[in-house]
Amino acid sequence: MYLNKKILVCVTGGIAVYKAVALVSKLSQAGADVKVVMTESAMEFVTPLTFQAMSRNDVFFDTFDEKDSRVIAHIDLADWADLVIVAPATANVIGKVANGISDDMVTTVLLATTAEVWFAPAMNVNMYENKAVIRNIASLAEDGYRFIEPSEGFLACGYVGKGRLEEPEKIVELVEKAFEPKELPLAGKKVVITAGPTRERIDPVRYVSNFSSGKMGYAMAEAAAQLGAETVLVSGPVGLDKPVGVKVINIESAAEMFAAVSAQYEDAAIVIKAAAVADYRPAEIHTQKIKKSDGESVINLARTTDILQTLGERKENQLLVGFAAETENVIENGLSKLKTKNLDFIIVNDVTDPDGGFGNETNVVTLLSKNGTNKPYPAMSKKDLATLLLTAIIEEERIGSTYDR
Ligand code: CTP
Image (tube, rainbow, N blue to C red; front, side, top):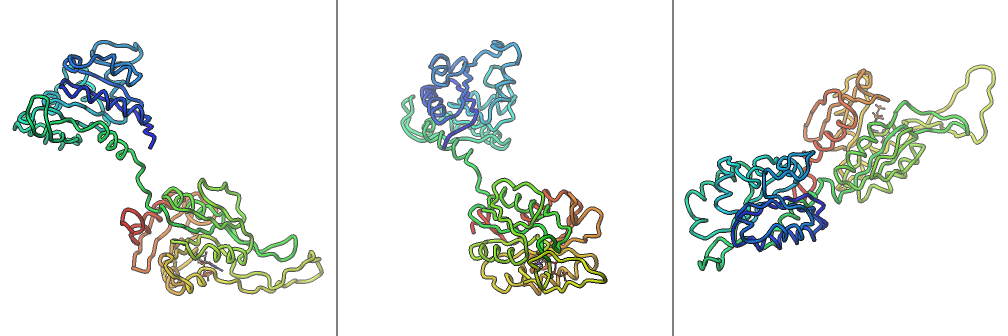
């Protein structure tokens, strides 16, 4: 892994300073931008020049040596770091930080930083087991500081016991692990989403459609991709940009949508049907433009396949999520669709609500589930709502890495 991070190594005075040289070198080799701050006693063991060469950065040790007049060095370093490692950490520095003392560059930076701070102690075993040191470590741990326990072995003072600075390779490994991207809840899952209206052709120049903008479905697709899913969006004709990281399949009619969704169904973990599919299509599609004539005209309509209903009948392990746009008896109608279409969830909205429905940037919905969930969401952007709805579904179904499933 390439460690694209800024790491501040605070070196305090103990014989293990030579291992801190290796630590700085290995962190730099791993890709990190490393800066070093030293105490006076650390400089008794190794000179700043060694750390400067290993880190290819200036080394700091004097609180009042302001190398750059535009900034205050200790604050600048404290703000710069993504992570601060105190290695080796002496009993002295542990005691000082535990008590809020800042009397040199190292302790001043440690007090000023809001980054995570790790201490890698190294000292004589009796010092490490001294009650005051144990007390200081416990109080720092309680304040959120992390400790890399020293290992046991032959100590420079001649003792054998716990107190050796952890090996630099091991510390680098811990740093890499800490910065590893966390697995997203939908990683490795395929999510299929439909969005927008369908167009049912009457003749080469005319069609029957609806006012769906596709915004809610596109927001769901964007949220699914951000949660780590392999996302396929089957989209009717809309004027929206392709969401980042989403595979878009453009279709026109309900029949084309049915074919596209069916082809994606088998290995899908979640199918979300946000599209406003036409329930009827012209019974006959004229190959030539229909000419006007006097008097009324009638277009006979035939039913389209209810895609969601069919998916519900064919359901194996897929999680099915429907949408219902209603103008009255919103919850009752939603619950009835949940049941008859064999869905796991249905998101219902009252399209007469001024903050919800077609074309708006915002929506007001209620999430209903087969387990009895009835969760209303206040008016909010379709983007925020999409993330909240997907997260609620993931939690209720215990999907993904968080639940080891
Ligand atoms: N739906 C579908 N195929 C259709 C019609 C609807 O997959 N031919 C899906 C929609 O994508 C939505 C859900 O069914 O997820 C509910 O759609 P809606 O139009 O609100 O409900 P209908 O079942 O069509 O019932 P009605 O029109 O009578 O309200």
